[in-house]
Amino acid sequence: MTKDDSNTTRRTYLKSTAVAGAAGMAGLSGCLSGMGGGGDGGGDGEKLEILHGWSGGDGKAAFNALHSGFEEKHPDAKTKVQPVGGGGNTDLNTLISKRLGNDNPPGSWADWPGKNLLQFTSEGILGDIGTDVWGKNGMKDAYLDGPKKAAKPDGKFVAVPLNIHRMNNLFYNKKVVKKAGVDPSSIESPKDLTAALKKVDENTNAVGMAQSTKGPWTTLQLWASVFLAEAGWDSYQQFMKGKGKQSEIESAFKTLADYSKYFSNDASTIGWKEANKMVIDGKAAFIHQGDWAAGMYSGQDFTFEEDWGHVPFPGTDGYYAMNMDSFVFPKDGPAPETAKKFLRYCGTKEGQVKFNTKKGSIPPRDDVSTEKFGKFQTAQIEEFRSSKAQPPSIAHGLGVKPDVLTNLNTALKQKFSSYSDENASKVAKAFTNAF
Image 1 (spheres, rainbow, N blue to C red):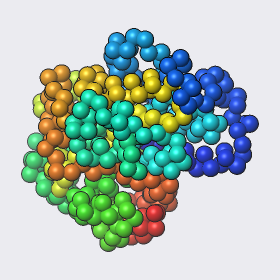
Image 2: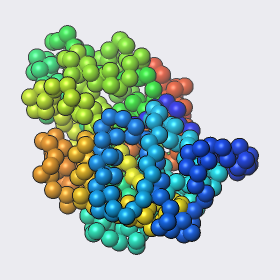
Image 3: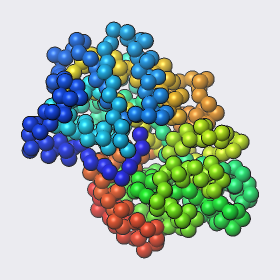
Image 4: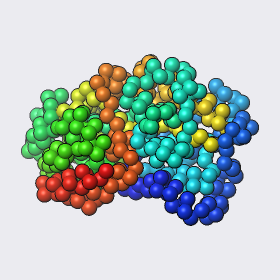
C-alpha cells in the first residue's frame, strides 16, 4: 500500500460515530456484507469476510495468489473477499471505520502494522493471537525483531505482517550516471548525494533527482531517509517517541532543499509514477522511493543491473527501513476460527512466497528460500537478513500514531510546500510539536 494526501484516521471516526450513534451506518453495512457483529457465535458456520485495498495491478495479483493458496490448503474454509479501491487506501480506511463504528467488523482486513494499529488496540478492537497464530509454523523464531514488534504494538500479537517494502532506496539509471561520471556506490552520505546531483546537472541533459512534491508523503519519506542517515538510528527512535531534536530535524530538511535544486520543473504537479518514469526514460538520474518503484521497471523493458541499479540511500547502509502490510484479527469478528487459519497461512513460507513474488516486496520471515525470487528481490532479502536494524516507516504510519502522522503531513503542506532553508526551520518546529 502507498499513501496519498488524505488520511482520515479510523480512531477519529470511531470517536465521532460513538457520539452520532449507529443508525446512520446501517444501510452501508447491510449493502456490503449482510453480516452482524461476530464473536465466537459466528464460528465456522459463517464466511470469513476479508477486506483489502489491492483492487488492481501487482497487489491484486499478489492477493489472488495468496488467497488461492489458502483455498487449496483449506478447501472447507468459506471466504468472501472484498477489494476496496481508492488512492492510498482512503476508501478502505473509511469503510473499516464505518463498519467498526457500527459494531460490524469484517473477519480480517489489510492494514499497516506498528503504531498505526494503536487506534484499534486502544479501543479493544483487536484480539490476541500470540498462541493460536504466532505460536504456529515457527513464526516467532522466523520473524526479525522489526516486523515482530510491528505485529504487537501494545505488547500482544494482533496482526501478521505479510510483506516488507524497503523505504531507504536510491534507484538510478545506469547510462545517465555513467555519462555524468558518478559512481553511486561511492556516495556515502546525503551531502555526497547533493554533489552527485550537481554532476548530473552539469554533465548531462537529465535532472539529478526525480521527485514528486505533489503530496506530502513523498516528501516525508525522503526526509525520513535523510534524517536516518544524518542523525542516526538513536535519533530516529527518539523522534518516533516525540523527542526529536529540532536542529537535527531542520538539518535534514535543509538537505532536501539542496536536492530540490536538481528536481524537474514539474515536480509539484507530477505523481511518483511519473517521476519514476523519468528514470526509465533517462530524463532523471536518481529517485528515492519505496521498492515498489522497481515493480514499474520490470514491465518497461528496463532490466536490473543492465539499465538500472540500486544502492541503500546514502548513509543508511546496514539498515532496512520498512513499510509493511499485514492482516489483523478483530476480537469480535465473525468466523474467528477461519480468520485464525487465514492468518496462520499468511505467516507461512508458502503464503509469503506466493504473495511477495507477485507484489515485488520481500517476506518478513527470514527462512524463506530465494529460489523463486528475481535478482533484485534476492539482493533485498539478503540485505534484510543481515540488517542491523529495521526502522519502521514514519510516512506510512508504522513508526507514529495516526494523529501524529496527520500532524506531520499537515505541517508539510503548510510549512514546506516549497523546499527552502527558511521553510526548513518552520517545518522543523512544527514537527517537534506534532506529537
